[in-house]
Image 1 (cartoon, helix red, strand yellow):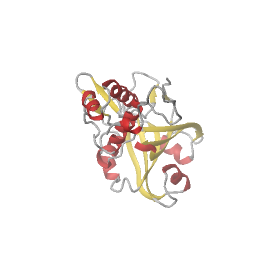
Image 2 (cartoon, rainbow, N blue to C red):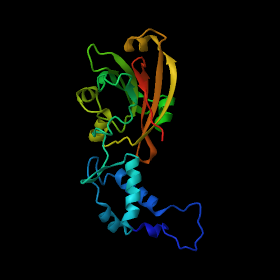
Image 3 (cartoon, rainbow, N blue to C red):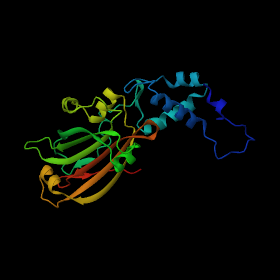
Image 4 (cartoon, rainbow, N blue to C red):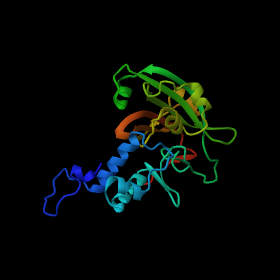
Length: 258
C-alpha cells in the first residue's frame, strides 16, 4: 500500500485543507492498524525502518518519525542494537506503567502482593454498561482483590474492584487469576489477546465504608483516595473499568506531567 495514493503528499501549489494529514501520521496510523490486527505480537520485533520504508514506498525518515511517536506512546519499545519491538505488559519497564502508587519511604519493600477476594460473572448495571460500551444486562466479569505490602506482616494498601466484558474474557476464572504470577495486564495479553494501550483516570477523596474499612484494616470513615480508571485497547475500545481505594499513610499517588 502506498499512503501517497490516499492523498498523503500534495503539490506545493495545493492549498491545505482541514482533512490534510502529514504523511508520517498516515504511516503511524497504518502501523497502528497492523498492531491492532495482530500482524506483530507483543514482544515481537517489527521490521526495520529500512524495510518498512521500502514496503510502504516512503522515506526512512518518515517511518522513523512515525515509529518514534508510537514508542513515545508505549506501543513500541526501541532496544539499542536489537531493533524495535511491540511493547508488552510482561516487560519490566511497561508492566506497571498504569500503577502510580509510590512508597513515601524510598527504602520500602518493592512490589505489592495480590490477594484475590472474588471473581464472578454478573449482569452489567447501567453505569458499568455505559463505561464499557455494553448493553445493560450484558455479561461482565467482576473481580475484587487486595494489594498488600510485601513485608510481613502484610498491610493492605489498595482495594480494587474491576469489571471486564464477559465476551472477551469467557474463560477467565478465579483459579487462573490466582495462579498467574505476572501483572494482570500481562495475563490479559497472553491468554486473551487483549492489550491495554491507554487509560483515563479520575481521582477523588472518599470515606471508608464498613466493609471497605474491614478489608483495608482502617477505621470506618477513614479518608481514602478513590482512583477510577477506564482502560482501552486499540481503536479506543474500553475493555476494563477499575475502581481502586487507596490507603495513603505510607504511599502516595504519583503522576508525571510533561
